[in-house]
Image 1 (tube, helix red, strand yellow):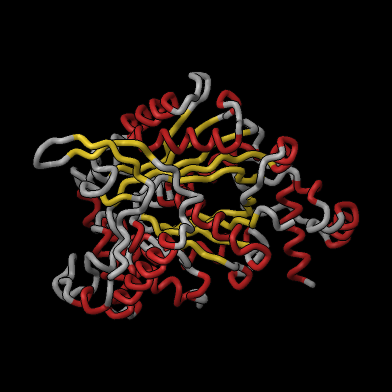
Image 2: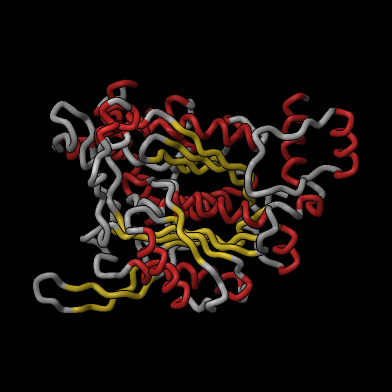
Amino acid sequence: MEKAINRQRVLLEHLRPSSSSPSPSPSPINESSLSASICLAGNRATNPVDSGDDIVVVAACRTAICKAKRGGFKDTLPDDILAPVLKALIEKTNVDPSEVGDIVVGTVLAPGSQRAIECRMAAFYAGFPDTVPIRTVNRQCSSGLQAVVDVVAAIRAGLYDIGIGAGLESMTTDNIAGVTTVNPKVDIFAQARDCLLPMGLTSENVAKRYGVTRQEQDQAAVESHRRAAAASAAGKFKEEIIPVSTKIVDPKTGEVKPVIISVDDGIRPDTNMKSLAKLKPAFAKDGSTTAGNASQVSDGAGGALLMKRSLAMKRGLPILGLFRSYAAVGVEPGVMGVGPAVAIPIAAKNAGLEVADIDLFEINEAFASQYVYCCKKLDLDPKKVNVNGGALALGHPLGATGARCVSTLLYEMKRRGKDCRYGVISMCIGSGMGAAAVFERGDSY
């Protein structure tokens, strides 16, 4: 009963007018007022009118994820990767582009002003008028998810009615680079110094501190490729992937060939333990993180169009998913990969749930070491996590990953139907953070 009351309390908080800045603690609601509210509202499962203020995803899509410098987007500019996603979101919903209040794009590696301009250009290519603003956001590997959450917060605050949260990364165009000028203060601030660690070394730290073996890491990679290959062969990604017309330039002859990119090209169906065992550690001589059990560097984009449930219902738009909660947390920079293990329970609690209530997880496989640790720490059922593979197979275009996961999660929840009500997206974040968001299946009511 206490759990049910707590869940109702959280749901009532969702229905209250809110601002984009979360309150550190909700105003107290006594049980008598709660009971009265329940009587007035009725059962949410049978009275969706009372949840009209829920923020919902009415369309979500992504490009294929391609190997950086070698894959399908190696000769495609970043704005040409993003534009088809923005255009598809409008086409899927028949929303007038001028009605979009803002477009927020998560992106990591490019200089901020340069990428912001490229995103603005992409919006024009996609048919948006100059009256629709756009901005970028960078919270490292969670940037695509953060973009979606920023749009949720803005709609809740009444800043606009319709928004797009997206993510973009071209790791062909922009390389991962360290801080060029290091502040000497890092010599006396150990955690600041650890923010500068290469991500591969933080993977090694996680493996050593928490006892994640090389065999466990390689097995996770094999399973990721196996699941991704099976999902791709079964056509599970077709609904979420937007075909992109672009070009491939032959590096030897210079010949330009028009192509349509619609399939993730980083999946290796023949990945096996024997082949992975031959790979040498990539970051430390005595390490266990290799090119085979770390995420691939990739190019890609994804996005979601959001609005209030009441507006979606008024327009007769399908509801893919309902946003329920979000949590961003800080962890030790030296073991940044543990972030999901901390963020997921908090996000679940914020939604009035427990981790055990979650039916499906999309956890970014930045490195097999941290992915294995987080799953073990939270005691997650392997049959519920990354059921269609993850970044070890698909790739990890940093700013796009969170947005990609929104599509992958919501379409899989749709396929599973009534047996899959709640889903979680989570990832670790460079410099020591984690993020997680809870979504509810769109037709749960």
